[in-house]
Image (spheres, rainbow, N blue to C red):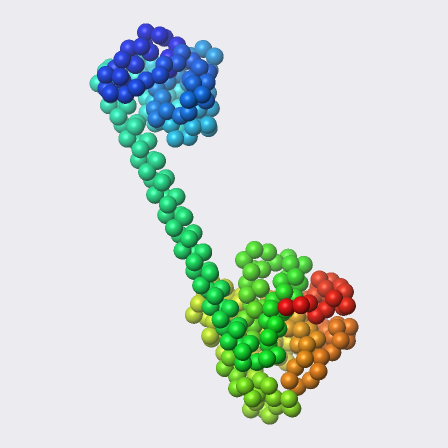
Length: 333
Ligand SMILES: [Fe+2]
């Protein structure tokens, strides 16, 4: 593309003799119109100074619409600064005037090669990215399947856990949203809710389902489900530390009287404090081996009564804001 028809024609001849087809345009505007009509071309050779639209503006507009085009500028000796500006804007090279045939061939070949490389690289990168995404998706899916299997294994063992994990997860997520959790942190709450009692897989069935009071040794076994759950999950939950914290610490109490570590107040991971509240609420409002269920308003009263000793006060209030209608509780699983 050049406003000087003579330069343009002779350049076109050189390039055609080199085995490539050419289209001529006398201005940037005309070139853009041709591209717009016929689609992008592999290579544009453009003069820098032209009427209507200069080379700099042309590069900007052309690459915005056709980013895969190779552009080579034609420059006079005095235009080196502008040529450099063109390179910064994405032109691949420049040819100095007066034009030498050998130089044109060499620069054209080099520019086309460069473009080919860029396109290939992009293709491989995109291909690789989609492969990685696919692997990531499959990994996540098998993790979810594994989790589902664990939950089912536990539910088969402890009739009272059936539906409990799912409800705890739902209560916890809705409460966590009001507490500002989003994205991956929220997803970990969901998973942590699902898995919080997974360590009960290691608790003896007769203890899990014992209707009467527990002996100290039996109570110890029950307590062990929290650290045991953490140990079971740790090998494949390295990237979900919140899930592990929930599983280990969902029986801690803010007054320090909980288990397994006797942590108090803010030392208890926040996500575990959330699950502690909603776990207790669901346990109270569904039948257990050792006692019948309470009504939701009764359970709400109990949460409030124990706020500040057993439970985090702010989390109790947030949970009650998330589920303001006791008549709608417990939620279906
Ligand atoms: Fe538990």
